[in-house]
Amino acid sequence: MIRYAKYEDLERLSQIEAASYPRAEAASRESIKKRMESFPECFWILEDDGVIKSFINGMATDRKELEDIMYDDASMHDKNGCWQMIFSVVTDKAYRGQGLATKVMEKVIEDSRERGKKGIVLTCKDGLRLFYKEFGYEDEGISQSNHGDTIWYKMRLTF
Image (spheres, helix red, strand yellow):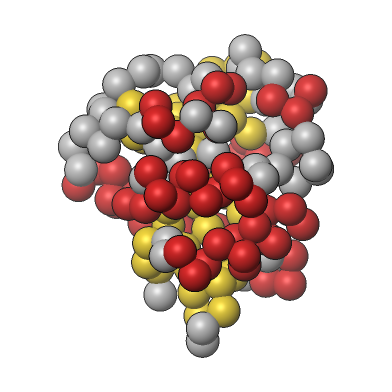
């Protein structure tokens, strides 16, 4: 089942995020909390038998580019914004390789289309570019982002 985040999910989401990204890249518990409070409708969770296994979150905005400041400034969210930004695509390590992130991404795409968005923007590391291309994302090359002092690639899905 894919649903939106609830406050009681905070600890589990924080644990999965911290275990999935290097410390410099992972959203803090406080950042996740602010995201959940500011844009719960943009926080998709795959839960099975009461266990959160995978999630995707991000904000909506009229800005066409994903900017590093967005990761920590939830106030930049505009529910009616024309672009859906994605910050985290995460699956608990114990459940990887089962296509769970694919299921959540399909729901994100479906919801974003239904909400009338122009498309979705995310950044990813080199090894994940092909994964996102399978959904129709276009690779726009190396991003301006320096989040976590690593190289990110900008991916855009335009509807």
